[in-house]
Length: 445
Image 1: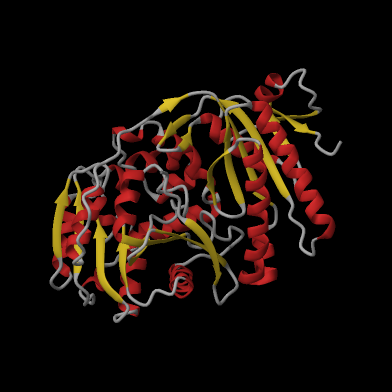
Image 2: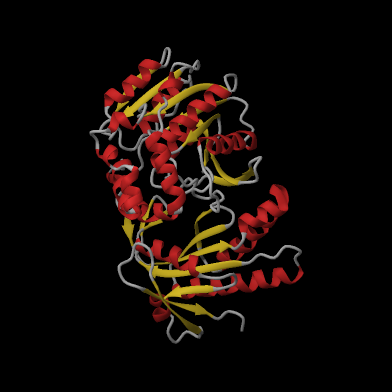
């Protein structure tokens, strides 16, 4: 079973919509991820062994700060202040009375985690830091230290490719995930906002915060990793009473066991699942609710969630009718897989008809755009990766409200089957060398 965090939204005091995810039960654990390389559903999806282990012991809470992932993207100013504003909104929305504060090796994540621990001395019971370092000075002689803000400003795409390959420490069970994430991560944050966060990361120094941490603290480090062992050991030495543990499990399951032991939980031993990395034909449909962020701001969380539930109901009703497989959803968008291109086309058309019928009587219309591609994606642990999936997502992003756009491949496979297409020309799809020709599908007749 693929674990996908359930995505919800909250609004900060300054009116910004922040996405947060939840998975598992038990002791609450607030996960501060590698800003700006976060996405509450996609960033951890290749680490299914890790997620299974984590959610067997903890109620995992993840989030995207403003401008990143599924949070509101149309923002101009980001700072350490806005980061703390965003995480505080998540703490309130998730009703975190007592929880563990956890950060990975990213300096902005570490800063957020430490500030939360200092601001909530009674609520934060433990602090766990994975492969931390005080500042970028510690990494001056490492590949990540050389991948600096100047490179991001010079060539954003080159920076992303370099940073992702340094940061992601995937094992052999996640074949294909690195290429997928290197292509996908560019869509998680706009370049202008991403560069601002990269600059903040390069200037960050958490040294002054370490000695103030009063909670029991565990510092873990995976070997090998771009952060030198000496850097993480120095962090542990500056936090009163902190423990330091090193491990070498590329699935990170061992890290979860160390954490569970540290906080006094009897963690179940979870063996890494055997990989079933297979490639076979699939039609991949992406749907996206247009104007979701604006709707949530206008209607508020409660009424907005009612609209999202209706959107989910209609979508699932049609995908079940057409034998589609729901791969993932975050409430306002779906990724659906089909073994038949014809079934995928019929499902997409029936979805648009269903939304059109709903809108005729609804006070709040549901307008959805769709993109469809077909090929041989890579399947791992129930999720799909690879160029077929990425292109389907890129095509969906080109569609307008109420439109279905498909790749030329799909049009060819549906030749003679009664579907009507109109040529929408070519576009430059990010991550693809050749221009992609797309077609609009007529569904109203």
